[in-house]
Length: 281
Image: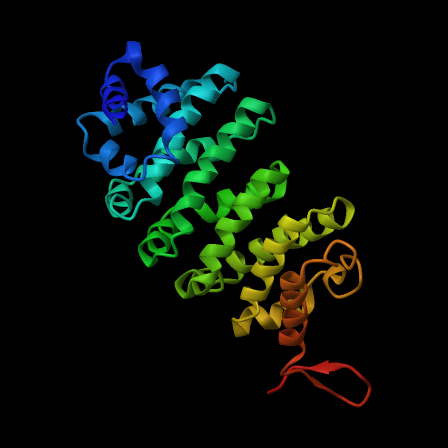
């Protein structure tokens, strides 16, 4: 414990900061109250934010090195610890700290240092939404997180896509989040278009874990009556036929969600004698 305090003190000094970041990020799982210790110690959060801001110049043009990426990701790991702790989460949001990570989510370079940076930044947001707190969703909806996630869902690595889709799923599972996304046709159609592209991609390169989150997003969208109407027209055929039967053969949960989704879209449809679906008046 003495060592933890020593490393936290060492974060304040640029000479000792890099090693302290490394040591503390290794210990974050084993020290349950590390988050309050970081948050309430003098100058620590400022030092972590300084680490983040220091690499903004390396984002554009994209010159980020592996060493820079590893170092800032250690700082991000400590911020993730603060984001997920019930005692520090509210203050973390009130200070708008997630906004400091958005420039990282805007990056498009495919090099490993950038991929790692995006993934670790998404991890911080993922840790926030995992708590299922209303205040988290309310905060995120005032920011640009949905378009940022959608862009990563379309073009990121498989791991980044999975975390970004998980974040979208958590936003959708909240009633306010679902209402927000279904409030305008533009928002809904952007989400539906990206999910559709992902299904097409998954039919070529299957990933059970990613598919699970995509199906859950569709299922949740089908809880909204306007979205349900639209999904009847635009749900990808691959989710209606046996395309994913092999991928999902051992995944009973996702199979159940998929069956429920198809059922939700069939309910309330009236078919005239020629077999053409009619929308009920």
